[in-house]
Image 1 (cartoon, rainbow, N blue to C red):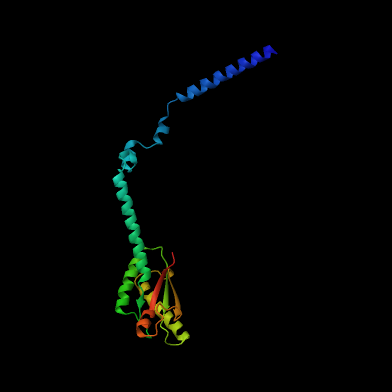
Image 2 (image 1 turned 120 degrees about the horizontal axis):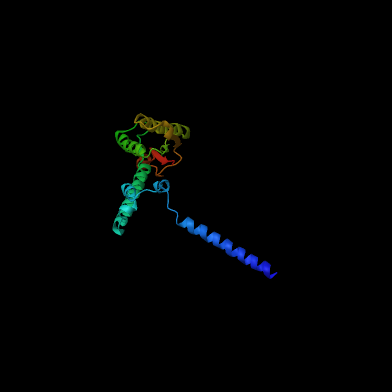
Length: 191
């Protein structure tokens, strides 16, 4: 029994020695030229604008963050302007006025800058006229806006139309001031 324990201890010592020798030999191994070529040099990192060329100072990082926030605010403001600037029509008419064309030019410019955006153009009317007539008039208004945008180079696939007729007034008054506000095309960005 003692002899057997002795053999086990000697065997474990030999096994440990072989293991240590193997680990020691592997750690002294020099990397091959192929392995070194996998990693970029300091010069390549600097040329690529990496942090090796010099880290940004805290002030520069703060200035960069502020600039990004300002750009995001400007983008949000332009998006809100696009949505909130309705165009208006004369009584019983779907023809674009000169002021409507000017607003639409700005909307076309925004759509060119935001090529992923699709828009629904809503046609609205005042309360005068029958419900059926106003639905048809609202659709003609939305379609005239759509045609203007298509002629300006916006893809028809990005433009949808819908008419609400007199169903969704912005002003519930029963006078010309209210009716002028309700004869409009409104825009909703889909994405």
